[in-house]
Image (cartoon, rainbow, N blue to C red):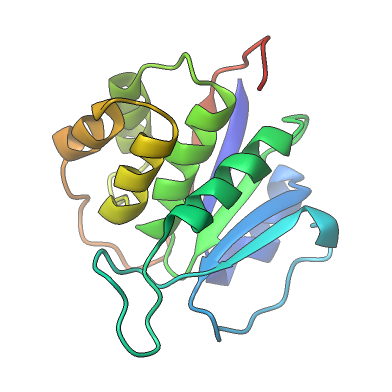
Length: 177
């Protein structure tokens, strides 16, 4: 099995080194500044300027859009899976778990949506995947509503303090897209 490490911003360097990650997806507000861990290759770092909202953005807020999810899918499909993929947002609770589910299905489309959502819940009692990202991912990955339903079925995660990284396992697929 491959692994996706989901992290809050505050722990990305530690987790990148510990898990030997070389690739990373960042989902942060457009103007949020941070330092990419040195072990992450600059050309294998996808930074998406998106806020953790589920409605159309207003003012400076940028809601997840189809283009963001398309970039997650393309990036995940280019991931060679020889080392874990690190995905993070501010707290590691909403945007990054949603992106982890999308990335997982992008590389393992034969995975069962319900089983994937249950693996997420087992890995993190705190994860509450961003519903807008999930709905867009469901559509773009042709899941027919199964991903959205599976995430709704596991419900909202427990209250979190933003310091609960986790690892989501991804089945190895011989026919990697």
